[in-house]
Length: 455
Image 1 (cartoon, rainbow, N blue to C red):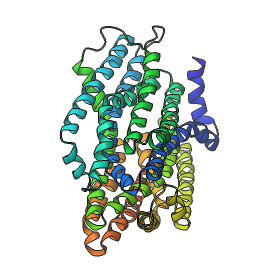
Image 2: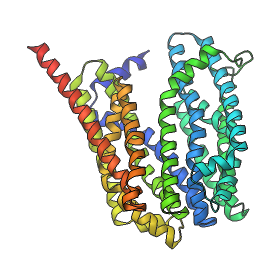
Image 3: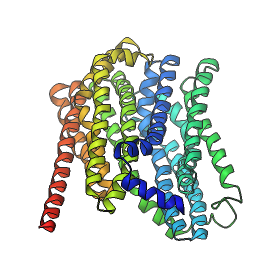
């Protein structure tokens, strides 16, 4: 009980800077580790298989992320629902949510895999595969889809684990997955000579090992939430609650995948396979910095949310300003090194001269407005943390669907392949000014209301 009373006092009284880093550091470490996991995959494939395999992975990656989004949707929805039920003291209902999470992920994972394997070539072609990259993308995704149920359960149970009072074990499972994958990648690719299939098997096996750790934890009868008979029968009310709650992050992830689909198709038309591979490499580099900002934002959200609820608006604005400042420093640093040393960074992936040249030019154009991206991410997630989820979703959709997709179709007709690269900084700039305008309007409205109330 003492701990429960201490945390709110800390959120409402402790120095903002110290508090933010205290809450953000674990999230940043976990997010950066996940990003490095994706980068390592591409590096090993680049050095061990070649540029065309990197392009095949760039085609398969959004498809793979879409699959993982289903597991995360169920997991996030179940995690929130379990937290509410545990808070209400409804432990038996929480147990049934755990069982339904497993049943639903097995069902969704199996159906998704079966349908996608049947239409695999058509789907990969839709995602931008050519006759040259299709064999690599197919080989990679076929193995990933064979382990799709494992992926769904791994993401789903990791989210539930956090709500069940084991955030440190959930983080450890993430690190374990990354560690095993990093060990198996070079073993399968360079020693066993399995090519791009080795990278896929490394991903599935690493997630499978972490899933075994999760299942072992939930198998303990001493745990408040544990696996037992009678909890797996599908309950439509539970399933509906989980899906409704998890739908928002699922839609955001799905939109991101769809945008990459559009980018790949435009690059296939105006630049070919090497351009798709170049975007895949640059995207992985920039995601390292984006995920750092997202980890920072995850530390900001409980601080902003608590103080907003406590009507301590001065602390709300302070944590917002501080987070925007740090996020902008991160994205400015990213812009600086990507503008000055793009070829050196890209060469780490073992790319050939053609892909390196395209990726170098693309990188310098894409990061032109990247300093604004940090603030845009912070503002969008700030709205979510104070209960304005609609504004957050709108800003995310604006950047991804309402701005970027039309630009992807319009600008290449003027500048060719460069038009595809230009569309990204243009959409970043427009999204930032829209987010900043919405924030300024809200702050002005609140301060005017406070002034009227004081008067």
